[in-house]
Image 1 (cartoon, rainbow, N blue to C red):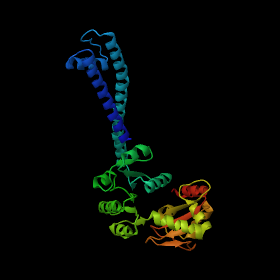
Image 2: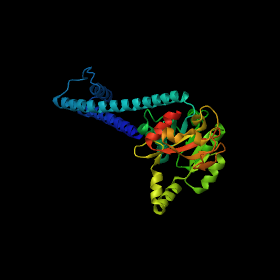
Image 3: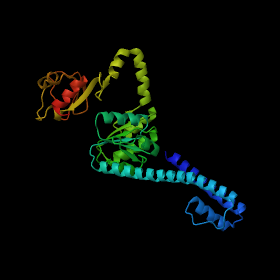
Image 4: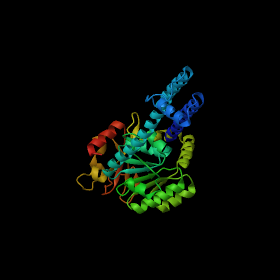
Length: 335
């Protein structure tokens, strides 16, 4: 968009210069005006102010002036519209950034997405579906102009710069997603972010296997390799196609005709703060959802936990159910 406007402005300026040169040269040679008088006549003709001719015009000169006026009306009008569009686009960009900054000042425990490429866009769509507050850092202004709306908050800048991370509210954020296609940039962002917020959960994308360990050492909690996951997924569709298709239908976005997965922290499911056994919760009877996993306070996962398992503080339950059952679960426990 910015390049298009710049090219339009260049064309508009060239056309204006062409009109003025045509007028000055025409008046000088056809009417024997001096260069100063020719310039004066061109100005009053193009601007249509009508201060009067230097000398009376002959029929041929009147035809020339008429053509000059008609062409100048269209060219000057075009130039004004292009310049106005350029000024408005600048002001809109400034106003958008002010609006984003104002919203950011009131945001806490939000997610920062670095880069709005293929992976960043998918992450933003999932966060939006799950109604999680997030802001996107993107260095390409054209991408922002194309996708910015009331749901997608963009900050224009490069996430490798500390001031941009600070502007995104990294001290108050809960999670950072590094989704840029460059592993070196992701590593730099991870290192900077970890220094700014020790408690920040950092998830990073990696293209090369050699970058995986570096990103983990740099402070990333999770490192995702999209290409590796894609290759494994395609191979699995050959080996165990039905199982993979079933897993593909699992979602957290509440789509119709799909199976949903949800996690609930101990504080929500045991609102009184007392540790209880799974069988005493009676979750399936209340909501229809089934418990398929348990995350211990130390981060270990137990698949298909026993009914006698006692939930501990800072643990989480993972449940599965149809969309309407998940909605019932959310209502029951205020998720």
